[in-house]
Image (cartoon, rainbow, N blue to C red; front, side, top):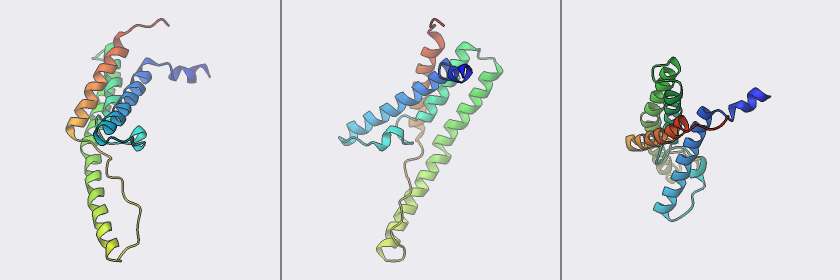
Length: 154
């Protein structure tokens, strides 16, 4: 049990979780500022500014680099992981969102003409623009730097 609880006190995991949480909080705040209404789907939803996936993976990467070493094998694995996450966010998942928007428009058109019944709309906000990914990465670097350099009594 002690080892299991240790997961929650790992500076590496905490850095990743804090980076994700801060990014999600920023999404809520930015949406509130832009639309003047609270959107509860932004609390845990994907897509939007900044990328929480990018911030989480880069915070982990940065913390590992600062604590274990930028020339370590574990840093190399974290680097590759962060690259795949950011590529997926700005590439594959962004394309998925564009496809969903097109399919939703088609379903609206066909539904209006009586060809199909009302179906559940596909989620369109699943990916990120390159700017959103970059903003998430910068946030991850800042949070990772804090977790990687601040020494706490063990």
